[in-house]
Image (cartoon, rainbow, N blue to C red; front, side, top):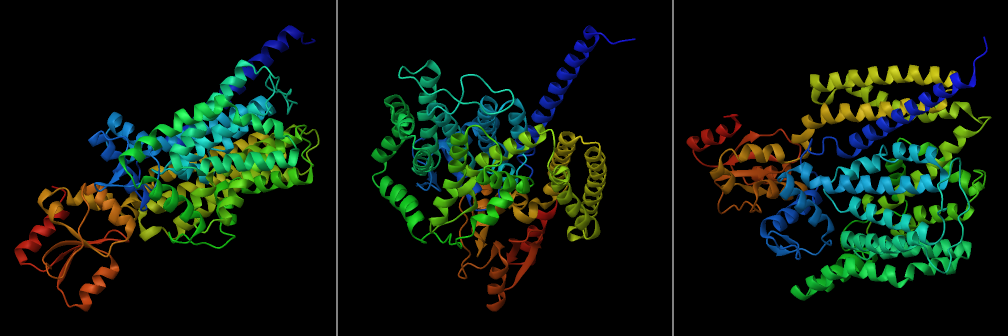
Length: 572
């Protein structure tokens, strides 16, 4: 009996709805796990997180939202956007690591959604969906969205500004694309309402980027657009960014804080503009010296586990084999991606977070290449899709093998974590192989994404909390705070900057350095500090050595004092 059209149409409609629901659930789960899950699983790490959190807490406590202060003194290393966000989160949710990192997570989400909108308008829903899965799962976006630092807010605001630039210069079509790129109609002299909105939003978000990290935002945005106009000869379009509306929105957003802060602090411009911007870029004064090739490995790591397909996408663009209709848009995305890397490669001061603004543009090209390859009737290299799907799975298997065979500190919890990773990798390897044989390439890649998200959940919930005492002073500070008198008298000896700042934050006061003239009492010492005590033949007793970087000791004193010191180890 022949199947009628009325029987087929509802089935296709139901399948289409089910597919959309499935994509939506997977995208929402991915965004939550990669950006918001377990923000407080580990205490503050490194020297920046506790310093920035201290300044934000000071703003929330004192109500001074203009002058950033570290230990009571003005601190003009960075503008206040992150501090404002963290201080608001502290007021709403209380002082915690999760609240301090929430502004970065929200910023990452906003940048991802803005870039997905751009991909949807120009390249279609399929490219936008892949972008929403690939961008959050990169190591760079996961790491910096979980950091209480200025890098992600700066990168996110700049990303949204660059999306607005694409609208202003006429690269975005009036209607969203269904299957691929469309030619955007040139802007008319009488700008439409959408173009006015784009000009205002461009000024606002570029101003927010300047409030996040300073004038580098203007340089990165202006430099990328200048290079794009140089290659495409579209100078007239580029000059639209200087529209009075955009300039007014930028000035109203960025300048008020700079003006008020400079009036209250006469040395602000010298310290912030000259020392922390020009000197940081032109001189090695801040000791962040790296070789010229430093950002090559950093970029590959930041794009993992999609490094291979990202490299292939860029190579295809340069060889003009990707088949995109909007070559001028491809040039724009490449300039957006490459200019930050080139700019900061020239800098005398190099840090991994500097090239974070380039990651969204690279992933946009990656999502476009993947979506276009999946639409091809004749797939050029079918095994390539299996490789894409198996790249994150191979990393999971490697972690599982090492943790199962040689768990960290020979702990049973790490062994179980390794076993779970091995089970996950084996199941997904089997699924990817079967799906690739059956030519279900998109589902195979989705299996790799799901495996990577599950691996993140395992890592957040299993080993990460156990590693907290090794890399963060939070556990040690909690132990000290059980006895307020001891916490008030504690001193430090040759601690690393990260642990010094971290303990300062958790103990809510800057620790004083131990002095030989006052040898008796509780001291938190580094390995080099204990060597100094040994050289000077000063008696001490070790009380807590669970971390890698700081050891709680009791220097001198009587047996009674030593017993009091041991009481810190009791949970009661």
